[in-house]
Length: 326
Image (cartoon, rainbow, N blue to C red; front, side, top):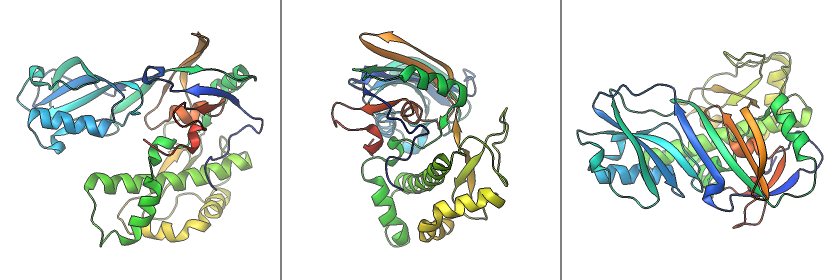
């Protein structure tokens, strides 16, 4: 299977211009905890415009005179966006030491006893403006997303630039070709995400992406029975029966990659096949459409919106699902 992975609806979605400016894509994260106000870690809530999260983290470390490992954040945010995001810094300095960085605004500062870690998010709130809408019944598609959700694909941001090709080239040579810890983590995440999308794409084509089949591994804590797919690593898949057969069939062509991933030390995990947005609402905005919603950690706005729209970015002039860049 190749890009783009299949949609749930065979009819052509409505075209829409996406991210004409960074201001057209706004995201605001909510942490799973409230900083205590005391502790060795300075917490900074920043608004960044058109800046990649890792780059900003490095700039913060440089400005405070600490090692990059002393800076923490809970999740990556789209570069071409206006994003409100928390960072932590292990430092005795206060917010007055925050360096002036173009495109970055300090919104709030406090302290906490522990470093901010990846995944410590309650959700992300999105406010997205789509422009130059084509003709079609986009409203019916949005109503379907409210009722049924969308396939929980890893979005194109995850695969960034040529990261998929680079990861595929690096993995067989990983013991001989040393890369940074950040790049190693990125490459492994890209490969697991690609394999997950392959399984999910097969389930979408079969019409079983949002309903359990025999032998399914269900999402823990979900209010309704929600199927999951594999994040590949060491150990046998927990799926059995029909679910295991579907996964095996989807991944058969990648069996060499599966074996290599199993020897990296990663433990096999699961991810929901269904992405549910909450507070999904839309209204006319400046001749286009403003869509607002919340997604759980790890959910991609592009994965949700591509079910209703063919997202066109002015800079590249093609569908965003083909745009494998960050």
